[in-house]
Length: 292
Image (cartoon, rainbow, N blue to C red; front, top):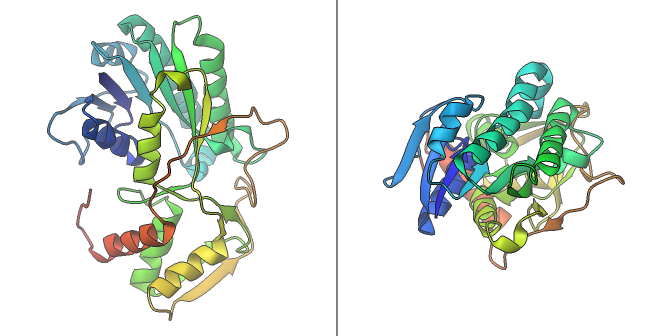
């Protein structure tokens, strides 16, 4: 099978690309930035998500598309709503139209657990609109679509907006951690390689037309998270909580009572959060090293 991954140079997209290659799939990476992670056997196409002709050409001979290109940070979406709407909503429509033109019938869309929350600000609104387009137009465009609602991701290749990368970097370099919240916020962190593997599992025909939640199996508060990082580093880390959480983030659950219920997809094997945090600390300690 040959697949195209929009946003294939990014955190999630690059790991999905590598997992697909490991499973013997032919991979086309489509992104506006060249990927530092592209590996032998993967084809890279540099292009804009709003360029329908470029997308259609890149999708030639592909059987499925993973749509990962997005403005994925809550703060950036709130500060620049025009770009967030353009990329997250119009970009999704462009991908769907290009898939129809190219004869691609399988679409897997990287969404978020925020999508039916009361929180999430502009980011939530754009991801909800993208899901609505997919739900409304898939049959018309002859697409078998799957919504992949990702939770809190962490691991190698994360950018500076990633919470665990920011905290571990600050802990290693400054011997302190500052968190904007009161420490009671609950998250289900999932390692990026586990998330990518589940995204590839979702390519199976039985998941067409489904909304799948891809989240971690361990629930912990942000206070427990920072204390775990501090203990892993041997203690001596100054921890500060600023009880002024960004209004777009949720405390205990991203879901509201009007949620369009999906199904959780999981695996019997996964990367333990403690080991994942240790890996992240080691990556931060090895400054400048690009670790796959």
